[in-house]
Image (cartoon, rainbow, N blue to C red; front, side, top):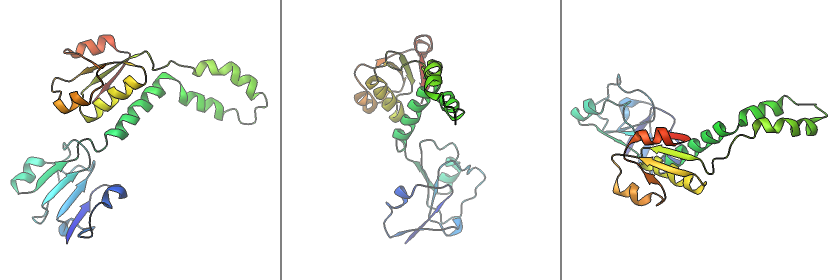
Length: 199
């Protein structure tokens, strides 16, 4: 039987993948493993019984990996696990930036009881029209798991996509839409693109 301690809320969907041989504990002193998302562990002294720290995410900058390694505690992460969710948030942000959706919601909310709403909405809707993503230039800096997904969806949405990654992996290159334009100089992204996203 192994015990794990969650320093942050971890999705039940993930925790349910543990077999019956794994049990959550509230005490780090009883834990064999620690699961963390964003909690800063730099001041956390791990008991000797903790064998590993698992970061539910990509980076490990919130974990003193070298210190833990010296005491024999393995630190690992889960790159790509949240890639789809981040990709969706990137496009939500781009849509919010392109069209004043929040302003439109606020205007609509302020019209409660307006008997002339149909007429007024016809006049006001021009303020919230914004611009389409299709045909615009998207620059993606960093073509790892998330950046590749963002670039590919950008292509599917009719965008002209430029990608920059000096460390592009073979796996990412093979996953990338063939119409994504790879640039060798990041300045080309800044001078060419309507939208820029950094991963």
